[in-house]
Image (cartoon, rainbow, N blue to C red; front, side, top):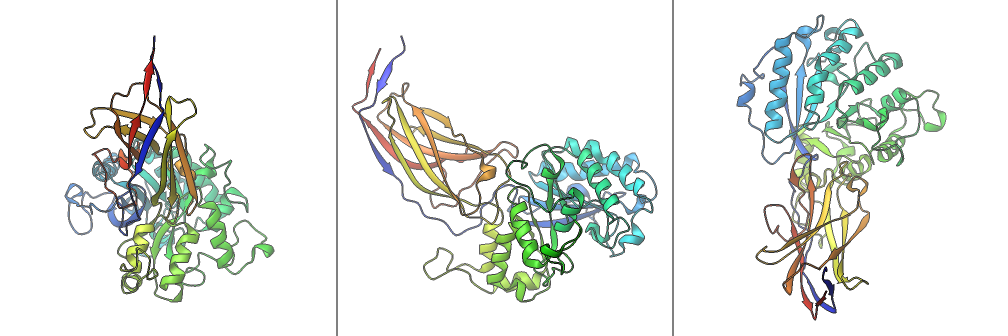
Length: 458
């Protein structure tokens, strides 16, 4: 007959914690570097072979650009496809989440260099499809639709609604169901999906096409219009889905859309829009998850030369650049943690409050759990938490709870731990608190507790 445990009293001793002012090494967000290849060469422009390329260990993301120009009139040969495979495999073997961009131009001559017939682009997408689906766990974002100067969807012969819709649909069908496809302007998103409304909670993270289409911007805060990303038409006066709206209206659209899909890119052209205070507000509004770490150096150095944070802030001694780098994407901070006896007297109720302090959500459903263990880890008990981390929005406090049965426990003194884990990247998620992890699995100690006057009956 199974034993029944009755808990009469516990002593809960929470551990103190404060936010720490440092960049966390978490998947799917942060600074990135660019790596460029021609599809007919195993060398990058600097002359190194694919396998010789070293990446920054502190960066989870990398932007890999592959230039298809040598085959802009013909199908990709098998040798080119094998080079693409080697490139993707090299970065995935280093544990990187890849932002992938296929281009035909690095000279600002999109119309001249891209294929003369859209069918060639569609065929190239089809040829690459098996690789894109094979590496779906490693290819986080595909930027652009293969068209335009630098692959940025401008200076192209294929910007009509018909061509863009056709390219977007085919690329969607050629990619794995975990890969987001990023468009260069919010107006392109509206034009392709023929709506003025961004994603909502019901359509987010579903199998429908528009739920996988995100944004990128390689002219963030470059000017009033972000160098042509936005326009001069008010939403109230818009007559076509492809109209580019006024800056503030476009920022508001991104704020809503990017609750559920990613946004990121480059900051360029030092100006008042990328001064520290407006820059941080814009990055928050856009829900930016990733930024190029090298460009524009003038803007980045402006941030490095200035501080952000009040005198009593944990960030008071850090630069604005450090603050921005630490808040790209999601940044989870733990608050109050409590442990009490549940009403059945046979389990404990664990509660912790957590806040996403980053600029954006995580866009991934992580595993979340409480763990009870002895100091020596001779006893370890896990309890999963029912929650959807994709919906932990910035600055919204989330309260998590779990009921932990104690029937098998044999000791009086235990430690309550908490952890978040990403199955896809196989990484524990770092939390922005001063306490350190207790073991290699990335579990954080919330506090100690002692069971008093527990009784078992059978």
